[in-house]
Amino acid sequence: MATNILLLNGPNLNLLGSREPDVYGSATLSDIEAEAVRMAAAAGAHLSCYQSNHEGALIDRIHAAKAEGIDAIVINPGGLTHTSVALRDALAGVGLPVVEVHISNIHRREPFRHHSYISGIATGVICGLGVDGYRAAIEFVTKKL
Image (cartoon, rainbow, N blue to C red; front, side, top):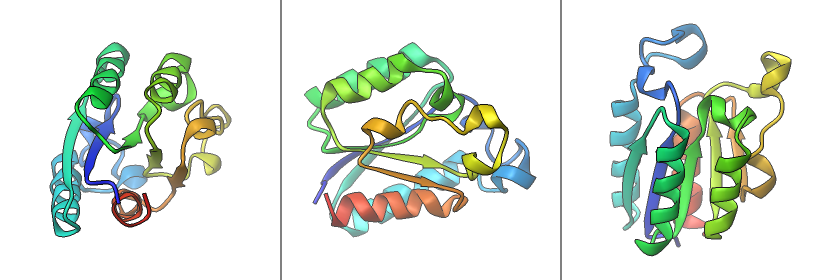
């Protein structure tokens, strides 16, 4: 069981709750993070959260995770999913299990969103379940990893 989990959220996810609620729902990032922390604690794990709109800051946080004893990373890379080889390389480079989460079903959206640089190195990928995807990811890492 993963006991030390890092939840990462990429660009524009700080706008959840007000950004395209028809696509992303009404839950805020704070709501999602609070629920994730609660779920992890109930399973006997610790979860820390980090969000940035900057690719380099996310990469630096991933690099630090290994040294901090993080057991697994749950990440919603936002738009960097479809563009960032550097983010993919950082995740692969630390060698930790990764669960990729997307609130919307990226395969039912614009064609440029159909490809993920992260999926190929992820232990699991969850998309299209709304914010329940975060819950599924936390449950998975606390029970299966």
